[in-house]
Length: 620
Ligand code: PEP
Ligand code: MG
Image: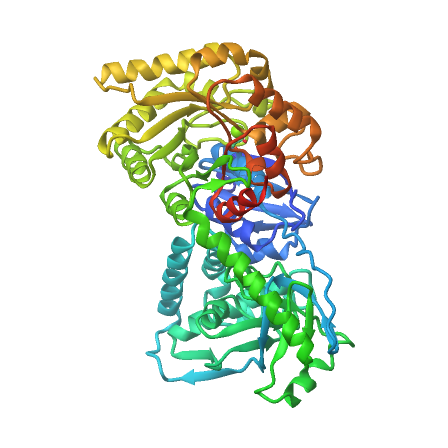
């Protein structure tokens, strides 16, 4: 009977393909597992003739799925259909968002002392004695908890770290560690983990060993055994085979000048954290050339400084006077450059010729809004509201609160109404399956169908505008508008909502995302209707070049002359304020040209703001 029941349970299978050059690695796996757990179905992953639970990070990790490989996602029973649809689109987005860590370009430099070369993890120049890493066990100093309680405590610690760093790259590391901790591996004792570590040795996923060791140490520290790094209280360069992710925050609170690793990769979690702490770091893999490093170091006197120039990838154990002189100048210049752009981040920005450029932020929630403020955004150029809607539908009150909190932070905000469809779905709304969802019910087309949801969002925005200090510039932007009729319909609904609720919206502006190419040929008509435009280059590029933005192999050159020509055509025709909020606005090579063709407002992700502002100041 049980067998029959099982047999008749709804079973949906979908094939998903890894499209990230990094493969299906720990951080995206953790995010995926976190999403899988939201569904009441039995969900498994089938690949390489093995079927593993989609809630177990280590098991998925052990499948070692690489770029180009596919797996079957099997959802059985309960919400199988919903789970399959949601997880499939979630996976596509996950792959799209998985950034390739670009190799850091090194510059040429000549030194007199003998040189060891390596791969740069984080740029910068350090001059200090080298100290070899030493770990000491501090037993009995802490109150010991039983394993289960220690795991709960560690989980709380990782959740806190995740929350604190939500908008930064490193947040995913904490989420990944939390998911590993939740897996069966940590069920009974540490034997399973030690076995797993042994299995990973010599594989492509060897760098993940550090995460297992790190977790083990985090748990152990709550059990009363704390392994601490013995670190000097005077400036030093740290030499280690490898560092654990949790080591980085420890060393960052000491007079650390630089790090040399003898193992590892620039994509390891420790490397990501070294970059975010801006500690000059280099990997000098153990090889015949560097074999001599360790014995030489033990022979170095603690007072003798070595020179680590991560900008050129060089380590000079015994620098000459000339080397030191040169490095000090370089160090000063590098620090000044970094400091200058960061210190000047709150200042308004002008080019050398005096053209004022506004640098705004793309945000998604209160955490990213706060980060934008901290990074010096002149306002918000794109508030992607769909992230508030992903799991369950927020109530009118929840939406109003979320918008109010964000409106309070800035005087100038462009809020985009729900941009659902394409690669973004809502688990609680049934969008009919489309063969080409990017060419289907997306953005404003969706909102014009789901009027109740649309009207509620507009009302929440109005209420939020009403509860913050007056005189703010609030702009409401409709996504994926492809003709003037859609804009007029959307604006009519917005006016009706205001009338029905007796709200004065005369101070609110209405505009469109310019991301559908046909709009370029109707700009005259649009100009009569809209208050502003913002160009979504991510979608505009996909539709102009017929290359799906999530496509695994096809890519458009960010500064393609054809794209630039389209952007020039647009800016030259419109008489209403126009900005760019797609990824192109933050692309280093595009800044000068965008300003030259006439753009004066760029909206980018927060962490790019200080450097973009500096680039603008240096351009004509
Ligand atoms: C765009 O399309 O360029 C854009 C900014 O919007 P999204 O990436 O959210 O579609
Ligand atoms: Mg878009």
